[in-house]
Length: 438
Image 1 (cartoon, rainbow, N blue to C red):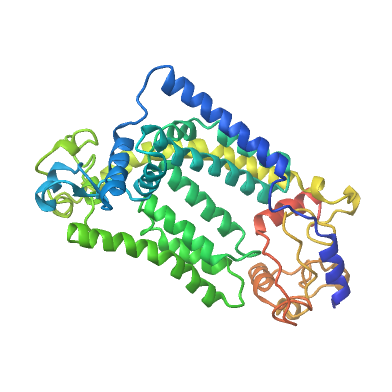
Image 2 (tube, helix red, strand yellow):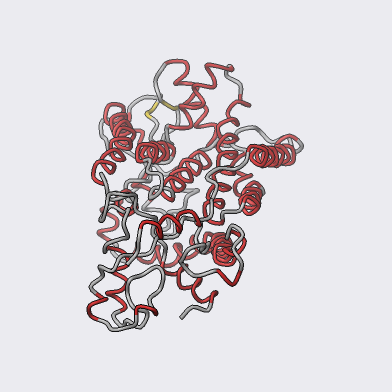
């Protein structure tokens, strides 16, 4: 049976994982990212004499200028197929997203209507992404060196540098999305549902694509929130996100006559037949109804997903796989360096002094698992982190008991303390294999 002194020793032996970068390291990282961005602007904009705006960034800038001058979010650009339903110009901002025009309008008011100020939102978003990437790597590895390496790799990413030199919405959306991911990672230890809802709301204003993904986010927030007041915190998350989505729907309702007015449905027609390409469709005056076309050609959408979906997914996997693999290797291979001075011989998979997970190791469990009554085994063979005998054959019951049954004194189910963070079974298995544990 475990005691409160055992739990205290485990908590004292837990390695300290910093939640933020040291000021000097953060300053050096941001200076490195800023230097990379300036080199990108010099090589791709100033020397070739390229304009500061592309077609898309000019569209955002014109909408921001209209907002700064008249207080109305509008643009002279619209798809030809939508003009007959929108009336005379300027048109509501339906081909585009409002966050970047809002930022451009504020900058135009402060610094004048100069094209160069449109580069400030993507530049700030680029620096924020570098910083947030370093924080995520710090949370995973517990090493400032690994965090700096991840941040510098992000600062040298060609796609990030490409979009940082143009005033479009890709990097502002990516910055808000990365912030939301970081807050989601830290939700079990530091619940900040309001900040998470605001981050996702800003991402929705940058690129309104969170509608289909909202159930996934709700499930993730529900599963990661600590049990005390879980429902109330989920409500706070929704209360912080809903105003952003409601504001966007209200703008479309009053400006275009329908809350669902958008150019997105016409994107469903892309690649459904040979003439529907992204370069040809914006100039077409007569496009079929997307739903009617899909009803008349039921196999067109599956064919598009098979042919073009794999082609779009392959580059993303090619970029993501090395990064995820590297983080996993660092996560599993670096525990001994974070053991806080523990010798290799005293290292155990999940017991006192463990460093196999950057979060504090779980305390010894109380003997309240049903598996202890079903299986036989000597108490001396029991692992330090589980009350189930090591020879128990009821694997699923062991796993369920590990996650849901009583914890040692000082936890919510026993005496009202804080429940330690969960430890993924994959990492536990790899760490146990490293130590030679059965």
